[in-house]
Length: 370
Image 1 (cartoon, helix red, strand yellow):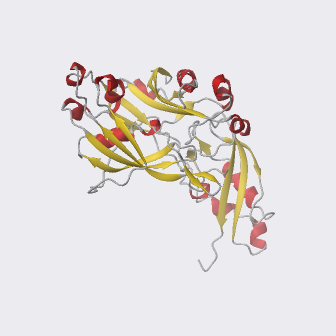
Image 2: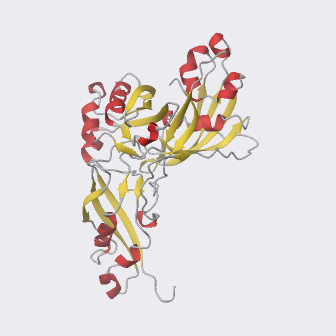
Image 3: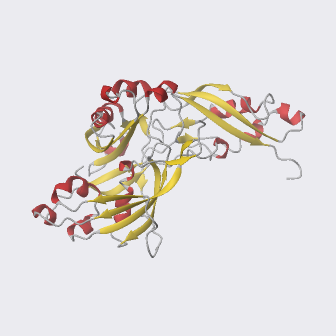
């Protein structure tokens, strides 16, 4: 495959979006940019005023009883919780081949203006849905997830919830994350090499490490993936300490962890990288292979096979078969790939350090008539 809780979060920190989404071609990536040392505040969610929600592919209920308060208070909009208001949201999510939501947007929200859409987006890492099946197996496809926020209706805790303010990091850039070896060592013996998933919510320490992690999601249940994820979250993940150094409120981050199958761990292929530095479009034309020019070829596709280093930078790149082959397109892809860098945790919630990534690059030569 080629590359391509206890606290109500009142504000959010947005780290820089990936320079390239997993579905983009590296040659189309914007100019490389290093992530800034500090984060900015996320803009409010914009909701389209749909008359009625689209048909749901999956449904999730949140809250309703006092015993559900740990999860409810984690994400529930503060004003709506205090006034015991219910809400309905439909998210349009891109569900990957593993059934995980790589990204979501608000498609419907009722009532609007109370924060239910933003709250629903915070639940993305708790979704684990059956993936869409194509002719050759699971494929990435959009699905509608309907979320019902049912107001608490019994008990003293419903009237006087202990709401705390916190800052939440979204799309974190990791300075440290587990490796394939770490996941292999942490995988529960009971699972016997089968794939699993767990999502945790952690508090960021002043040094960038994690503490106080709590389990948000485990699939399948009872196999030990939740316990393994909590241990990995508190020992193997780290962000830039500056993100928490000057925050008055606690800083939270969600950490989703997919435990690949034994076969996938052995292959160590990075299928969904999050690029922090991609290909500079201004550089690519200068690397168009002279062999192709001499042969009158104006377009071609090269592929570089690289290993991901501990800092996310690509190393040991080598050319693979190009199209057309033998005209230098893959050698050009290798030169372009050496300047690329990815986040240390992938978009499909798996390791990248020590993994292998295949970088396809299409090069087009402008002619005098263009």
